[in-house]
Image 1 (cartoon, one colour):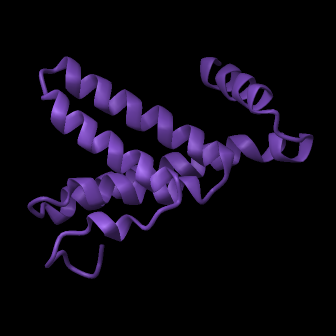
Image 2: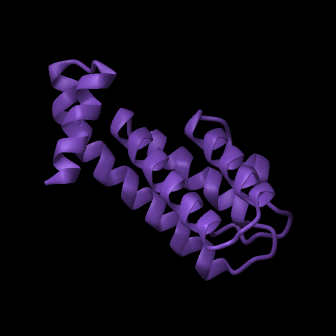
Length: 122
């Protein structure tokens, strides 16, 4: 119920039209799925120095869904980074991850962060 209330409030605050309002929840769900897929790929790849790429890619893919995807990407990214900061991860690494998150959400090419040698599958 809190999620539904949050989606409704965000859509009203964003001032999206009634047609966009109806698509916001679906965009958010698909954006969350994009974030999960990027996280799963990152775990599967287990490739050194690739985390920023997967952060940017997940946020980019989610943002392509529309305002709901951008919202989901921001909420998920912020929650993950806040949790990791709470668990004692360094502020520098958290800020670098957030920079990659913002890069992807802004629509910039996530391949900017792609490490050399990462398999084409990703």
